Length: 170
Figure 1: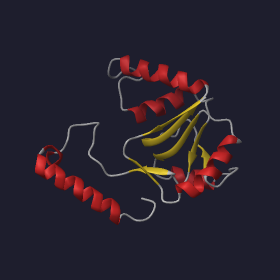
Figure 2 (figure 1 turned 180 degrees about the horizontal axis):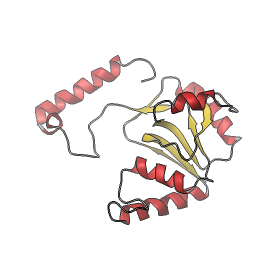
Figure 3 (figure 1 turned 90 degrees about the vertical axis):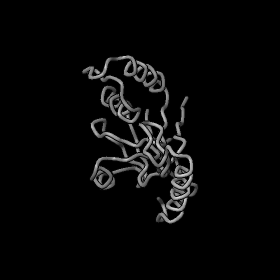
């Protein structure tokens, strides 16, 4: 009845294990089709959502008009699974620039799906339960330092050090 999609570069928040049961319990009380456990929202959106009334301070309804990017932790439930699959296939098969949505990165396609299916309620965990860690991209051409063997290894090591120095929760 549901599917969880985690990107290969997701890192869980340090307190995710402690917070997850409460977030899942709150989500179980809601009618939902899409759940973001980790994504980036437009500037100011998280503050606006957090200020709105909610049944749980960590779970907030995300209006269909509010986009999400860097979707690294998403769940779909019920009829939304098949609807989203059909929608993603249609987007991938359309020509670029199609007014109904042509080929695009999956984050944009999820946002288009939500906008074209506004009755499918979306919820988001705030603060996020998982975030995208620094890693070599697989969605556009690699930068020079990720293409050269020795330099690539050094770049990966630098990313690991950077992750180790990042503030808690990031």
